[in-house]
Image 1: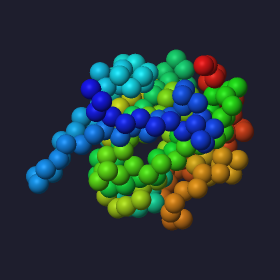
Image 2: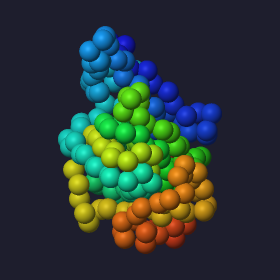
Image 3: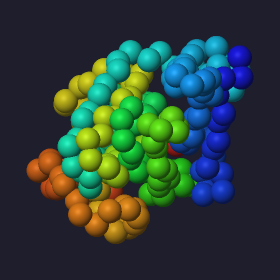
Image 4: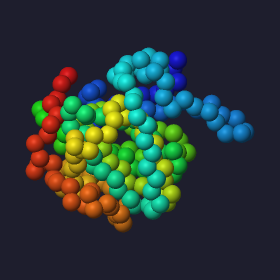
Length: 194
């Protein structure tokens, strides 16, 4: 027990229903380190939502500046995610898209590094995306639901009303992410619940 440190983002206007920074404890010696990247008992002990993780994903990007997102899946196929950089470093972002939320349209952005091992918990009701900060990045994340292409949605990564401060000016995008809609042009499928 006690193998993770958990921080919420209250200072940025988010409550405990929002994202959380998770830092698993590492046990190291001259050979390197060992850590549990997820453990159900540690999550329960930390008071985090009990989720049925059903899918693990990886995404590899070759160039620094690659942006993936801002993606979400609409209910009833909404997904929570637990994201980490398994190789390299990313700037990871979660945007609150829950109607009625006091933090609607606000974002949390944190640097996740394979060297340090931080993770971002992104609850359902948040659009998620990241920018690679180094070449050759591997992102690994757990989801509490499987992929449903018909439920997929996205918010434009550069939406000025959200105002994400992406660290790198050189950006590499998929066509799908390049033509995503502004948050204000969409009706969110999510409701804020305490």
